[in-house]
Image (cartoon, rainbow over all chains, first blue to last red; front, side, top):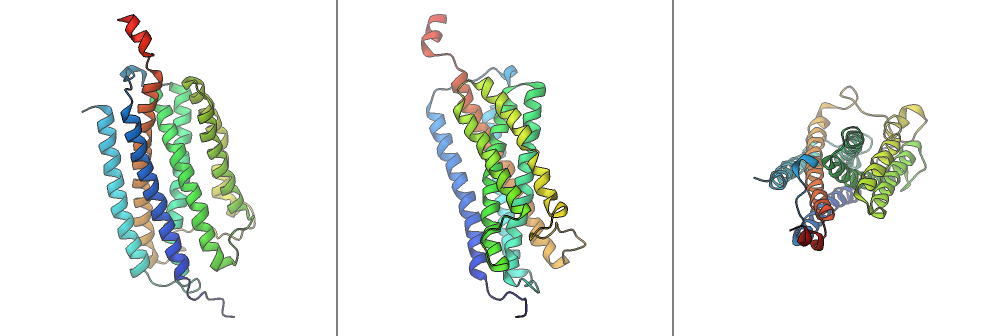
Length: 50
Length: 231
């Protein structure tokens, strides 16, 4: 046993794939939720209260 | 241009810059950087795992700052930013655990170990997830904002513990790297992805805070009957 890891590209692709998928899905969820929130007639809160 | 339009454009610009940097950094990490001597190609996971870890902790630090700012100065903007930072922080913490698990399998031989770094990270994830759950249970906006801010300050105690856990206790997880311990060939993809993830995080917080603001405005608006009576 040399202590050197050989191969393992499937783990590398899995890590990068999961990262891309999670970020893309979150971006999509933000867009969907924004569209849903924009359908309501929200009244703007006065600027001084922000 | 309204505040919403400004934050929408700013968030979109941050996201675009972040995605471009992540694509370039990942190309460098996967195709250009050399294979590490002992971990081989598996080490390339570091180029997404470490930037996620840094930015998860940075995001929760931002949540802590927003929580203190809300309690100190008041103002709904801090609560909206807190809501955004909490959700993005939990997202990155969860992603961090999954990436770490994928890296642990070929290097440690297990998907998970109750090692101090992993355990404190899991505690961080569930603590902040709990605060998001708490927010969804409270209807009154003022009460929700105050409780979430206080809970965030309490939960934040775990963040420095996560960072220092590898120094304080014997851990399977390696210690933090520094320019003295990382070969120069590994710097560029690591730093490019770190800045990429930083911009993506900032974009997500900005856009999520904008969504929180829109929802809060609808919640704080007087009912239509009262509006008609007043006019």
